[in-house]
Each structure stands twice: as structure tokens, then as C-alpha cells.
Image 1: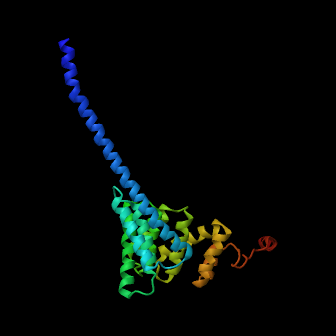
Image 2 (image 1 turned 30 degrees about the horizontal axis):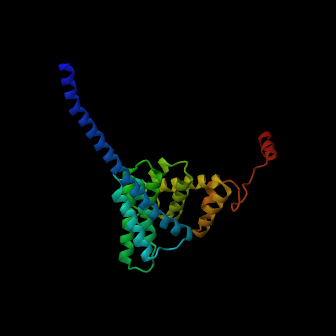
Image 3 (image 1 turned 90 degrees about the horizontal axis):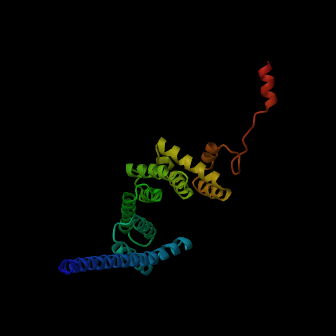
Length: 249
């Protein structure tokens, strides 16, 4: 009897400690879940603005930008850890901000650098995510910074997203726009991305050639593709009979 009484006496502090531990863990999980929820809600709000800008193809108003930027920063602050996807979305938002024709040139440059910084962070947090790299490459193109970081971003995007048509389209666009300033390696990368886009689907090919026409690069693409599909000229076929007669002689 004394043994049982002593055992129960020892069990009470242990049970209390376990209950306290479970309570602390529950509160921690509740707090963590609350932070994630608030981050997601703010991210969704900012994303709604970005989707609207992209869909309507219009530059955000000052009021819309302030609301969207605040929501995005709230999402980043509330999330328990650094989030690469959030940084990438912030980069796209800053790109739209930099398209505003009204602010001074200094402001435009500042917005471009904000976009570059956001995409750079996104690539650091998710180094194998190709869209972060293609976003960084495009941001560098817009800022006219075709340096080694730009080249690395192009290469990494192609390496980690060889079969992602969104990445293929973006890299082909970047490469064709900056063609005259590219080295041999990046030109080959551009043509390979363009080939993937052209072969993906007829609408994808048509969209590619609309861009090529604007950049006067149709002949360049046709020379590389060699498929004879409009707007490229049909591929001339050598007649078999002529080859046979030549070989007999």
C-alpha cells in the first residue's frame, strides 16, 4: 500500500509536466497555423491585384499598388520562414510597378532594382525552381543589365525547366529581344528554347512568330527550325530520281 501511494505521488508531477508540454505544443501549433493563415490571406489579396494587372494588361494605379504591396509584405512578415514563392510574386509585382511611364527615371530604376532583388531572393530560396531564374533574367533584361548574373539566370532556368513551356516561352522571348548582345552560348540556348516553343502547339508557334515579326527575327527562326511550316518557306526536297541517276553515272 505504501508503494502504491508513493508511485501515485510521483506520477502526479509527471502527468502535470506532460499536460503542460502538450498544452505548450498545442499553443505553438495554433500560433504557427494562425501565422500561416494570415500570410495566405494577405498573399491571396496581393495575388488578386497582380492577376488583374496581368489579365487587363494595365499598369497599377498608385492606390492599387499601395494596397497590393502592403498585403504582400504582410504575407512575407506573417509567414513563419522565408518563402521563395512569396519573393517571386513580389518580383512580378515590382516589374509591373516599373512599367509606369509617369514617375521620374530615378523611380523607374529603383523599381527595376526592387524587382531584381526580389527575384534574386526567390532564386536563392528555391535554387531549383526555374521560374525564379527566368523571372530574374527578365528583370535583368528590363533593367538593361546583361551581365554574368543575367547569363547565369538564363542557363539555370533552362537547366531546371527544360520541359516547362512557360519557361521556354520566357527564355525565347528574352533571347530574341537581346539577341544582338548575346554570346554564342546564349544564342544557342535561345534557339533551343524557341524550337521547343514552336513544336509545343500551333498556337504556341503562332505566338512565337508574332514576337519574331516584331523583332524582325522571322528569318532567323525559320533558318533554325527548318520545318517548312508557315510563315517559313517550304523545305526544298531533293528528288530521289536525280540522286539515283547521279550515283549510276
